[in-house]
Image 1 (cartoon, rainbow, N blue to C red):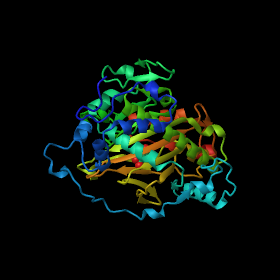
Image 2: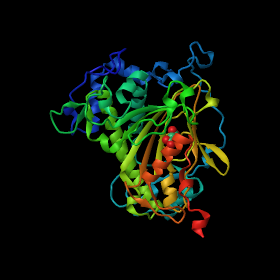
Image 3: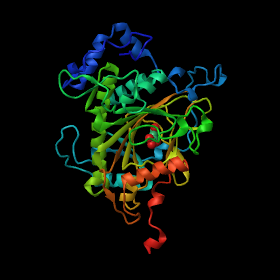
Image 4: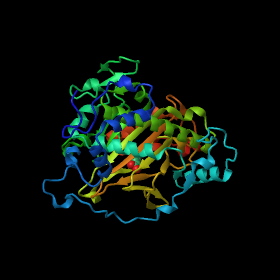
Length: 434
Ligand SMILES: O=C(O)CCC(=O)C(=O)O
C-alpha cells in the first residue's frame, strides 16, 4: 500500500488492524505515542499547523497564483472586525437541562424548567444556541481536529484517490485498505463502501457523499448552473457505515475511531436536545441517519469575493457544529448578521429545516454562512441528523412530505437554478389554508 505521507518518517509502521479490535480507543493513542521517538513527539507539540500553508494540499482552483504577493506565508493574527457582539447568542448549559446526568448516568433530579425554556426560546428567536457543559471530552475534540489537519494536509491528488467517490471500488489507485468487521484475520477488501468521502468546492452532496455540482470542474466556465465555487473541502462521514470497517493505515484507522467516538457523543447530545424541544413523534429523529462533515476552509487570497459556505439553512432536524479558534461562521437574525465567535469547548446547535416544519414553524431554521480568511485555514466539524427513512412529516404549515422528498427537491433546485428553495416549496398555499 502506498504510504500516505512520503516526505518524513512520521507515522509508525502499520500494524494489522486486528490488533486493535475490541481495544479501548486509548490503546491506539498509547500505541502511536510510544512508537514515536522523543524528538518527534516534541516537534509535534511545537508545530502550529494553522500558521503555514501547504498549497499542494489545496484543490488546484484554490491555489494562489505563483508569486502572488497577496498570499505570502503569513504569521499575522489579523482578523476581520466583528459585525455584532456575538455575546448576544444564547448560551445553554447541557448539564443543567438534560434528564440524564452524563457523569454518573443516574437520573438527574433537578432538571431546571427555566433552562429548558431557555433552549426553546433560543430556538424560537435565533434558531441556534451555544452549548456548554456538553460532556464531550476536550481531548477528543482536540484529537479530531489534529487528525483532520493531518489528513487535509495530504496532497490533493492523494485525498481525491483515497476518498473521492465514497466507494473504493471506483478507485484503482491508492486504496485506503479497508477491512470489513469480521473478527481476527479480516482481509482488505475493495468491495466495501468507504464510509468517508472527500469533496471540495461545494458542500452540496448526493446521498452517497459525492459532491453534487459542476463547481468541481477545473474550468469555472463549465459550471453551467448558477452555483458559485465555495472555498471549502471536506470529508463526509456516514456514521452507520463507519463502525463496520477498519483501515489498515494507522492514520486513517485512528481518525475512524475518533470519529466513531465523536458520533456517539453527538447522538447523545442531539437526542437529549430533541426531547427538550418536543414532544415530537419518535421517528422524527433517527440517530441511524447521523453523518459528520469535517471541513477545511483553505486560506483564500480574495476572501471578499467568495464564501466558504454560502448563505443557507440546514436540511437536517438538528446540526451541531464544533469550530476551531479561527472564526468565520455568521448567522442571520432580525435583518442583521452576527459573528459566531469561537469559544473553546463550546458547541453550536442549529435548528434545521426538518425541525422547523415539525414544529409548525415555532422553531426557526437559521440562515447562516461561513466567511473565509486570507491568513488562516479553518477547521470545523458538523454533525447532522435527520428523520427516520420514509417518515412523513405532518404539519399545519406544510403539505405532508418525507425527508427524501425534501432532499430530492433540494438537489433538483441546486442542479437547475443553483439555489436551495427549501421549505417554501412544501408550504400550504393560501388556497389550501382557507
Ligand atoms: O463550518 C461551520 O462552522 C458551519 C458549517 C455549515 O454551515 C454547514 O455545514 O451547514
